[in-house]
Length: 408
Ligand SMILES: Nc1nc2c(ncn2[C@@H]2O[C@H](COP(=O)(O)OP(=O)(O)OP(=O)(O)O)[C@@H](O)[C@H]2O)c(=O)[nH]1
Image (cartoon, rainbow, N blue to C red; front, side, top):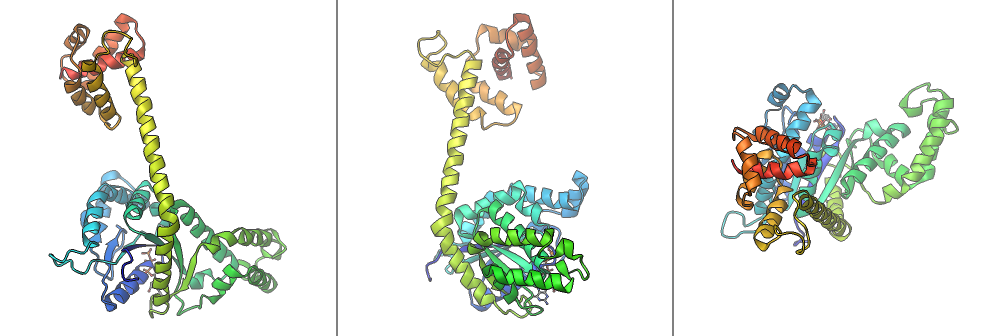
């Protein structure tokens, strides 16, 4: 496996599951193996990080200031910090690409083989946000990327908490569409064999359900009513069906028991990473590329439609036979310009763009003279007034607006 490409390992997990301690453990393991990883911390709200990060979101953003400035609560602050950070993803990817490429002429003779990423404990803020998707998609489009879902084993030992955690993991797998390793952490406190059994043997899960029912401790709650919690009750039959339904999901996962405290199971974790990285190249990458191509196609067809609509709005017939305006001199620059319009977001962009692309007509001059050049809103009003005078439809006013904008 000497030539395997660098792998990005993104650690996600509920608050307190031990992500940061796990990051510290795998970081020190890789240092011991003389293959130091590239470390990224994406948790803006963490107080102390017990390892050195190469990129730390806290270096570029003060989460408390973000909360104050945008008048947000803690989760909004984390989300907004991630959104702001996501705008720098190109720079981050540039750095990562440089660090993972061998370059004997510089000190980068031994390129990075692992990128490890710590994320906020508020999973949904990362996994369900646009910035989380941007960050994950960017990583996955360049490196084999694996999600390490960290689970607090002692807190997952009852059937209902186990099932809740599995459903959460399933939703993350479905949302990120990346290979996943379930890391049952804190095995120094409780062994993870029970979880592996439940995932591979439906009957052992049913037996555990029955035991909880008999002892009246369903869901880890002593004295829970059997009618609700028991294998024969509503929750029991729900758990049974869910565990059957999740069988297919379990098949796609690697499961390792780890103690971030003692280091037990870390070697198995890296074996699983290698396996998942191969799976990424084999199964996920083609799918990812297919999705990227589809997005590109959709973007192009949307642009085509916008172009057609705009041509219509501007009274530019698409066939050469219609009207004197449709000459090479006018048509070509318009098309280029309008292609660019769909990438522009602000009115100012539209104004600047049109300035160079389309020679004015007498009508336009009139519209422009109605404008005092003090801003786009006034120009827009001028175009509107013009439209009212001529009784033309709204679409036509847009073309006048574009021409009027050009004069400034
Ligand atoms: N016994 C034991 N305790 C652990 C282990 N891993 C983490 N812990 C403890 O679990 C607690 C939470 O660990 P963190 O690493 O801060 O958890 P986190 O998921 O990063 O927490 P957030 O940053 O709040 O999301 C700490 O008290 C750790 O010492 C482990 O393997 N064994």
